[in-house]
Structures are given as structure tokens and as C-alpha cells.
Figure 1 (cartoon, rainbow, N blue to C red):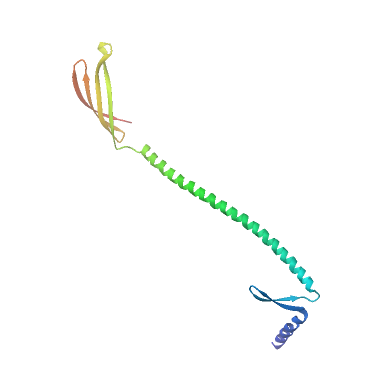
Figure 2: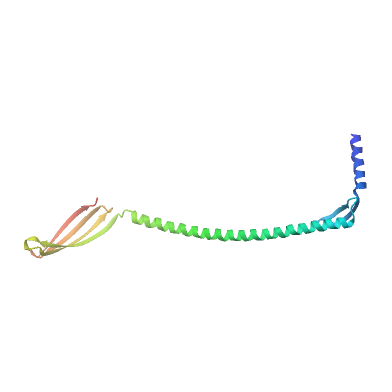
Amino acid sequence: MKKILICILITLIMVPLFAGKAYKVSTNRGEREVVIPDGSTALDVLLTLAKNYYNLSYDHEDLLIKTEQLTKDIDEYLAENKNLRTNYNELIIDYAEIVEKYKKMTGVTLLKGVAGAGVSMNASNGFKFDGVSLYLGASLFEKIQMLASFSYSNTTKTITPGIGLLVTF
């Protein structure tokens, strides 16, 4: 264990001796240490920093362009999504109206009024006008019709009442 500690201590002492010059730099996030490697001049370090700065600047500009395009795409997506949601809501309302109309059209009516009129002809007189009939009644479930009739005969000069029942099939 002592040998390992001695090796670590010697390594820590030797690293600064071969590392070159070190400088302290104050940044927005605290102090940092900058080491100029042996065999490099301050100009070499400056040029390397300038190259890296320009590369980072170009990357930053590319990212800004991509960000603008993505922002535009997101805005277009949101506008299209809003439009689709509006259309969807309108379709739901239209569908509800269609369903309601369909129910009205296909539903069976419990009770409905029926009215009618007719003319009678006398075959013995050569199919000449003989009288008038009026019909009033109700239709149940659109299948059964109950009618009351009143007929006036021109030849007998009388009004004749009547009732009737019709079945639709």
C-alpha cells in the first residue's frame, strides 16, 4: 500500500514539471487553469484558440438557422393542428345534425292526422258527377288508419256518414 501511495505522489509531482506553463483565467463560471504545452508558443495557442472560436461560431450560426426553421415548422404545425381541430369540431356538429335528421326521417310516428276528399260518379247516367266525399282520421304507427267519412249524394240529396279502417303493409 505504501508503494502505491508513493507512486501516486511522485506522479502528481512530476506532471506539473512536464506540463509547461500554466495560467489562471477568470470566466463567467469561475477561475480556470490554462496550460501551454511544452514546445508550443503563445502564438500557437492563440491561433488554436482562434480556429476553435471560429469553428464554434460557425456551428452556432448553423444551429441558429436550424432553430429558426424548426420554430417556423412548429408554428406551421400548430396552425394546421388548430385548423384541423376546428374542422373536426364542425364535423362533429354536422354529424350530430345528420343523426338527428336521420332519426326523424326513419322513426315511426305514433299518431298522424289523415284527411282526404273524393268525387263519385254514377255509371248508370254515363259516368256523370254524383257526389262528394270527405275523409278525416288518424294514422297509428304509420300502419293502421282509422277514418270517418261524410258523403253527399247529388241524386239522393243526402249526407251519409261512415267509418273505415285501413292497414298498410
